[in-house]
Length: 224
Image 1: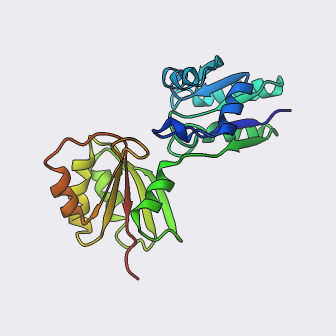
Image 2: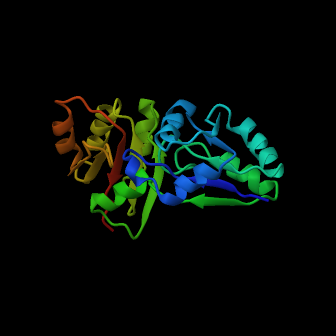
């Protein structure tokens, strides 16, 4: 019986798609994607016509059972997210758990991952780091989360919206004014940018300009 195949897709530059990923798409009976319109353009770029079905935050539980049934019927099923590695701050983990709970197998075609790329580019310690997902939207929860990083000795990697960056940087400046951050923006794309500095320095840089693109923030670990 075929395993569920998770395939990492480019986070910006389509040339990062591996030959193994191309083969996986070409051989798939059905591809479950976070956004079928976005993924449809990727498959069109590859010259492939594959059945596409949605699998996103709002229907993942239902799709998980459907995917189990597809696999049990002997179909070759691929799961992808809009960009990067499925299941990492994107839909996927519920599907993987359901497939494994059903006694079926899961495999993966590895590839791009924005958090991993950002922590390496930051220049901060990579021997011990933690990925803490998306920063909360609400002010109180955001402050509580940022305060929790105060004594964290490991490097911390988080995701932030470009629209909320100027909301979170002032809180970083209050809670950890001397700690260095790295703001990684538009990774692998034409306007890729990495800015390092204290929260105040970054706020001075970004406060006077419109911030665009996907953003990963890397927080240097606290000194022992």
